[in-house]
Image (cartoon, rainbow, N blue to C red):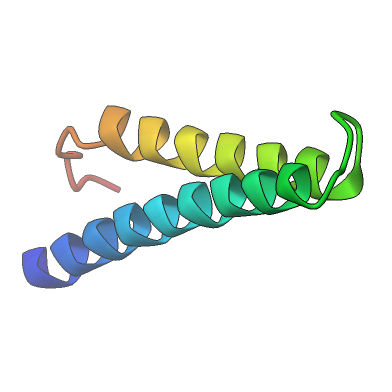
Length: 70
């Protein structure tokens, strides 16, 4: 079961990093094409980057092992 949880945590981290990278790429692309600070590409790119950072933060905070009681 620990291997499955480790794979899950790694996939969460990888997906989070991917979200951050896609968000940054969207912002750069929108600004390079002449978009303003409130253009759709900039706003959505920032939202994706912040979402990825938030997921990384939560994944890092939730790394403490849980006790398996019920």
